[in-house]
Image 1 (spheres, rainbow, N blue to C red):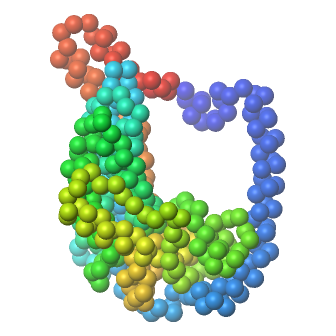
Image 2 (cartoon, helix red, strand yellow):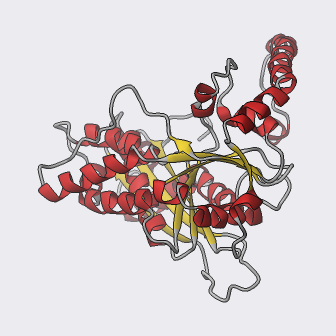
Image 3 (cartoon, rainbow, N blue to C red):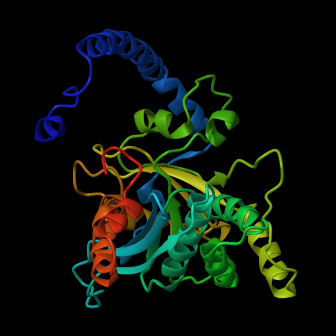
Amino acid sequence: MEISGQTPFAELPEALVEDMLSKSEQVGEELFNSFREIQENRDKIRKQLQDENILKRDTDVGYAEIPTTCGVDGSYAVERLLATDLAACASVAVEGLTPPSEQRHWPKPHHNSFIEPVEHNPDTGTVLRGLMMEMELELAARAPHDIVFLDGSLTTPLIYMNQAINKVLEPKETSIGKILQKKFKDFLESYKIILESSRTDKLWVSIPKYTTRRELGEKLQAYFHHEDRAILTIVLSAGEFTEPILLEQPKQPWHLKLPSDDKELHRLNDEVLSCIKRIFVLYYKPHNWTPALRIEMASSIATNNSRIALLLHGLEYQCRTPGIMEPYPLYMADRMVKHLGGAIPAFRQTATRRMAELHQGDIGEIFFSMHGYRTET
C-alpha cells in the first residue's frame, strides 16, 4: 500500500500503462493545437473586447481600502456499509488574509456539520447535497465580512436543491429529507440575501473553478470551442477585467419545487427566481500567476463601480500567493472540506467500537454489519 501511494502505476498491468502513455502523447498534441489557436488569435480577441468597451483595468474603477473576506465551501460523503449507510456533510467558513488595519478577527473557522446513519437508499447523496447547500448559504449569509466568496456558481444551490426536493417529496421519506424540509425556509431567506446583496457594506460573490459558460464567446461570436474562462486566462493581462454582462439563461426558465404550499415559501421562491435572472458575470485576472477568475454577482454590485472596486481590490489582495489559483479563503475552505470523505472511515471506526462495547453477543456480527462495500475500505 505504501508503494502504490507513491507510484500511480504500481497496481496497473504493464501493457495497460504503456498503451495509455502512448495515447497520452497524442492527447498532448491535440491539446497543444487547441492552445495555439487561442494564442494566435489573442490580439484579435483583445481588439474585439476593446471595440465593444468590455476590456477594462482595475484602476479604471478607483481604489478602495483592503476589505475583510471569507470563503465558504461544503462537502458531503456517503459511506455504504453492509447493514446501513453513514451519511455526513459539512460546510466551513474560513477568514481570508487579514488587512493590516483590521482589528476584528474570527478566532477559528466556523462550520455546520451533519452525520447520521441512514437506511440504504440510492438517493441519499442527492438529498445530502441539498442539505449541504443549506448549510453553506446559512454560513455565508451570517458571515460579518466585507466580501464573502462562495465556491461554485450562484445558480448551483438552486439546481442542487431542486434535485434534492424532488427526491424528498417521493413517498419514501428519509430522516435527511425531514431535516432538509425543516431548514428550507432559512435556505430561501439566505439565498435571497446573497442574490440581492442589497447592503452597501457587504458583497456576496461566487467564484466557480469549473465552468462551461460562454457568455462573452456568444457575444463576440467567437468560434472557439473553449469556454470564456479558458480563453480569457490567455487574453487578459494582470489587472484587467471585463465589463459585467448578464449570466447566460437556460432554454427552460429557472424553477424550484417547493416542499409545501406555504404562502411565505412561494413569496420567497418568486423573489429568488427573480434575482437569479439578474445575475451578472465578470472576469478578472489579478496577477500573471493566476488564471482569469469568473465572478458571479448580483446586479446591485455589477452596476456600482465603487462596489466593483472593493471586490477587485479584495481579490487582488487574496490572490497574492503564487501557486494558489483561487482566492486564499476559498482555497483553505476547499482543502478543509475535501478531507471529509477521507475522515468518514475514522468516524465509522469510532461508531463500531461503541457498538462493540454495547453488544452482548458475537462481536463478529458487529464488524460484518459495519463493513464497507468498497475494496479500499
